[in-house]
Image 1 (cartoon, each protein chain N blue to C red):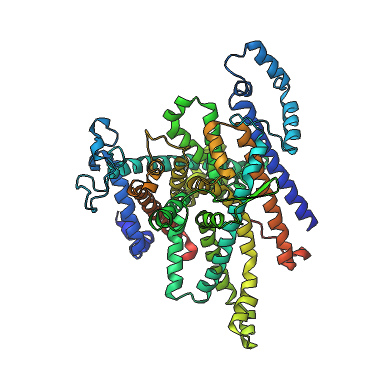
Image 2 (cartoon, rainbow over the protein chains, first blue to last red):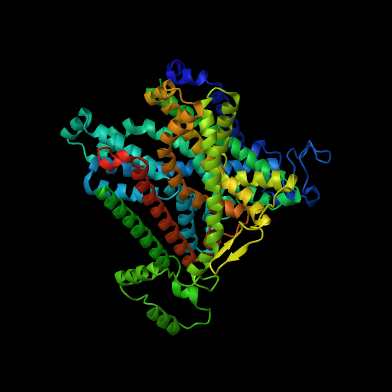
Length: 300
Length: 329
């Protein structure tokens, strides 16, 4: 612990007020969202507690708002604040899971590509290039669309979270694979790897136990930066109506549903989840940028 | 140079081939094509006949060859939902998307470059810092959220601009409908175009700024100053010209992103373009439209990438000698 507080990383963290703020905001959002069932004043999924009489109530600072619903309610009397907390939980979950998924694919293919070289390397890297021609959002949309075709309609809604994680994960493995591959190429020719080979370790063992730990730090930086991107992609897909269904609303779904009331002046139903999404993504991005600069020896 | 161009064309063909395989597989393996064409009452024998007539019992490579042959002619079959040829429906929607993308790119260039030059020259002024901070926040915001905020502020609260649609359009010939010629068409373009171009604008601004900072330190700028040239001549005649190479690359490559993000902007603003069509197609699992859109967009991407590469040689004559390795992206 003492070592951590004296490290360069902690020093650069302490010296950057913006990073500290971003860190606090991120922690606040993660904690309140994870324990949404404790922090949320109402349960937006409990249909019995919904009262249409409370519908379309503006936030508390308006004269006809109520203290019971701090950020107002939607047309069915659902508390917007609670919906945001539960929605953030799903957004974070899908974002983190899809980054993890793309990280696993990327590391696996990157290691194979860098360590084995030759034809395997060629095939993997050509695939990566083709995929890089297209923006990630288009790839995710396409994968999602294909799943829609394969799965029956009712199954799709139940599996929506997994489909989402899979589509977003598959759309962003390339960056991980490329980074891991180039670091692997460097590590491969070092003496410790040769030594491991001489004593008869299998290639799989060498890749996972010897090379992997040495290529992880850039991977973690990319993962942090991609987390913000994954959350945005998920929100976008949900907003477009091809992501998570209203029964399991993420922030994107909330914004899409609320968007229908925007023109009638009930701005809080869509804008406030949007503010939550922007705050989350901005602070995660700031943390990612800081981590990248702090771990980059050239900038010290 | 010739070898380089040839290699790039080879790569482009490879990309198109892979995309064609994906589009073809969607037809074959996502849902049953026969099931999508016939009604509930069709008997098994009739289905089998249709299957034979459609060539679905042919070997894989024969089917793929036929698919490619039709695709080159622009024939992707009949949309499951609209009952008309997919390419025809896409062609109808194409002008709306292209006009929106064009205005978005122009907006990004015409605002992004001057802002980049300004923040590069006056890097310590308050206005520059304001531009940079706002652009950082802008980059973190999802496109659809920017669109919703725009609608809320400028359409709902201020009533300045229409919140959705394309306004009145004028038909030019058989294939093109334009919104450029009517007041309501132009007004309807403003919000979606800014939404779509904002991200590219901040990108171009940051790029021009960092390139300007770099170029202004070089010797020939000092020499130009020593020659007593006016500031404006130095900044725009000497410095800006040399920042344009990366700007061209990024703008070119970003056109692809613009077309992808047009899907989002079109949904937010209910803009009748092909991005909106694509989303509807995904929702309805309308494979012919999805495949046709995919192939068209890939073709646009590939052509843009080729043009960007060709532009290098035009902008930077040093590359023609072949001594400098092309700055590949």
